Length: 300
Ligand SMILES: Nc1ncnc2c1ncn2[C@@H]1O[C@H](COP(=O)(O)OP(=O)(O)O)[C@@H](O)[C@H]1O
Ligand SMILES: [Mg+2]
Image 1 (cartoon, rainbow, N blue to C red):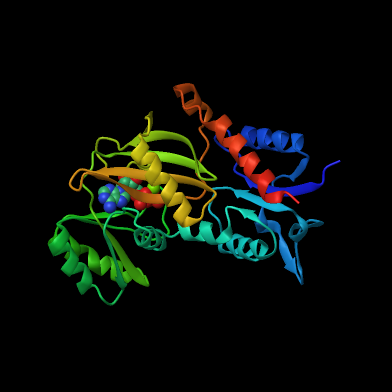
Image 2 (cartoon, rainbow, N blue to C red):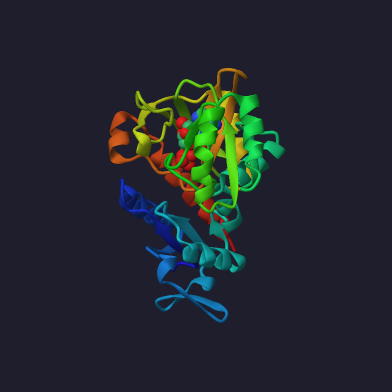
């Protein structure tokens, strides 16, 4: 007899389906039942309940949300409501934080975690960008809610900015977020953390023509070990953001000679079957730690 039941929504591509099955099996061994594939897109809220088919999600002991496929506004809205009444991994607040690059950088900087220098200003304060490009030489314009390197624009000089501003002004943005362009070797570290513990690390390298390491921007994954400094930075970033599960992206700033956090991902992918063949072997440990964490958070 199981005394606890959780809900789960985990991505199924890239080997996710197998990972999900392993998690469910391991939870069962601990007396925890899993209701799988709960997509909040198909849930409704009715008075005190959030219903998915006949299941009252608000009665679950926990909800594990791990689907990187775009979270629609509706899903996020129910995620927020559900987390007011039951525990979730990641918590709504921490997940929402990591979905926003400015909010994340702001929180990290205030906790003393190194990030790229940045500036945020109202869309009508474009002159702020002119001021900062003089100081920085090169900068990156970033949508605060982007992913995969999409929409990032490198601005190399003032003339570049003058060309770009009319386009940005047309885009009906609320604000501009820019970062100093970091002098780095076009490789990064992706460090996985679960419940404050180091799980694994790999590297990504931008393709010849690009400065972005994202696989979606042509980057490639390679085997890479983290050192103690990198692990310490990643742990601190995860803690400060409050995410139980984190993938922390770190690069080495050659000018300042220090590691900086580029972003914190709240749904870092497990190693794909191809990556496992390459030697990336952190999946088992990650699964085990997630199962332990769910067990811990649902203990009665
Ligand atoms: N300030 C920066 N200086 C230099 N390169 C950057 C900077 N910010 C991002 N990049 C490069 O662009 C990639 C994508 O940026 P990131 O902030 O992680 O956005 P996304 O969510 O789209 O992955 C990074 O992996 C890195 O290679
Ligand atoms: Mg990134």
